[in-house]
Length: 287
Image 1 (cartoon, one colour):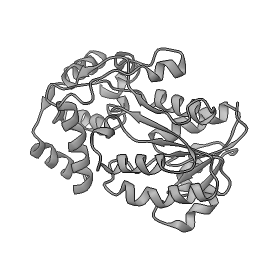
Image 2: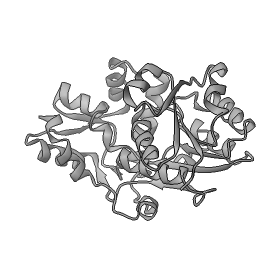
Image 3: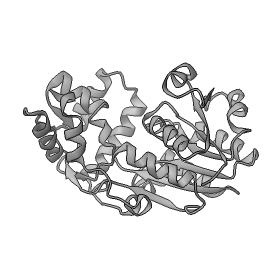
Image 4: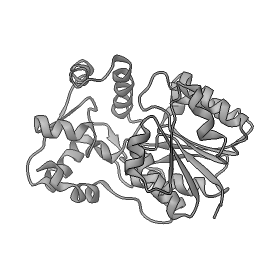
């Protein structure tokens, strides 16, 4: 067990909310970096120092980084500016002698060299600091409490441009558990880990699982990119974010998100959560 000090960026997001308690349970010191410190203080116990951290404001870097030995680095999700906003923070971290960075990106990013997240990966790989890269697949939590859940509540169905492509959905809690292991050990230096669930489903099959758990029909409709662009735009997503999400679903259609990888189970030494058990756990959410 490490006694080092760990900074969790994006601490109030899906992964951060799960990761901070796991690190505390492992007995390490944790600092939570977030754009919204008041929210962080409401989420975490008093033993966690919460600091403002905004990648676009360098004046927030020092309070977070000068303390830290290791960093969990969470880029802004679906941001086309991830490279421009993350690289200055990453360079600052290296200059303060942070000795290990665990970076979260996404499955299949290596297929697209100019993707902002892949460019961040390459920049980290070139630095004189230890690193671990986590590449999770699409989260089960998009079905609850994420944007797919909102579709179900508002429209009674799931409409996504996924075709009949399969996706090995992964639970956020399992990703956070792997991140905790990586941050509290030297065993995964230099590794890039693709994190998936234990099964691969089409989103039509996933909708059937959700329907069974909810006790009512929640159909899946595969829509075109233009229709989905309109759905996201009406929900308040920005144009650049929409294009990033369309790229993700294009990858599903083309089979890039179907593979099942064993790294998560090997590291945690247990089976990862499957989608059926996730759906049963959250069945009341789709009543």
